[in-house]
Image (cartoon, rainbow, N blue to C red; front, side):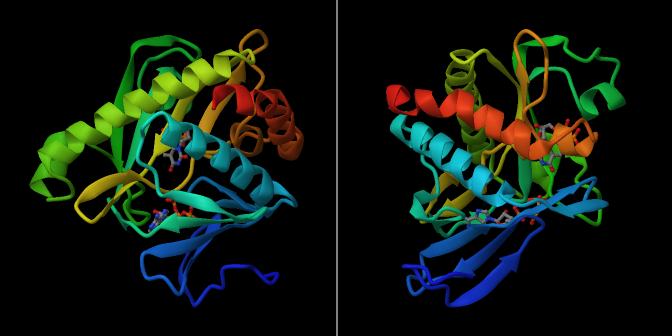
Length: 245
Ligand code: ATP
Ligand code: TYD
């Protein structure tokens, strides 16, 4: 790792796409976005140059935009092109999936047609467990397992829909549809914060006219050059960055 202004003091967690380090401040972590790209729960894996940088750049944009709209996020600031300082959270082992348009696992598991609008948008929960294949989980099971309280569930659902409204309107300005995305939340000092990342790895984004993908599906489904897709997306949305803030 190049010399950073914030020095990591230990490796806390090495995930499939990011490495998380402790810092001298016990309340702050350094998250490094690596060039690893994975799909199908790690079944497909490649190192793709520049991918970490592109996702970190996108995540900074979305986290900053959400903070400005009043969403509590873990983001503190960028430390390098591929790393950011974040608030340390006790992560809640749930993936909150918001969908505006049917795609991905939804059309495999249920008789939705790809591209079918979901009105109103749906919010569902997956239980984060690699050994169990991240199964979809109903709120009653979340409560029974003590994963989150009823108040926390209500807040996560409400915040997820608020984030959807903000991001959907943002992408719409550049002719892009926010099809679906995944969020993770965590706790710190009794409050709930948005954690992990929002990037092209965790969303589906389609051109409004052509339905061309600008997200991880390009890699998942071998639909072309994923770096070209991610760069094209950033070229379309970054000019809007200042106007949105
Ligand atoms: P998955 O793709 O299922 O999330 P992963 O563990 O391989 O698996 P990575 O994104 O590579 O995912 O790793 C990042 C890890 O850091 C995740 O486990 C995520 O929950 C955790 N994390 C993200 N933000 C924070 C935070 N602010 N505090 C503590 N842990 C965090
Ligand atoms: P979903 O259609 O449930 O799964 P898949 O991507 O396997 O077809 O995904 C919905 C959205 O959530 C999509 O934008 C990808 C994102 N997502 C993640 O980022 N990580 C995950 O582990 C899952 C299941 C989804």
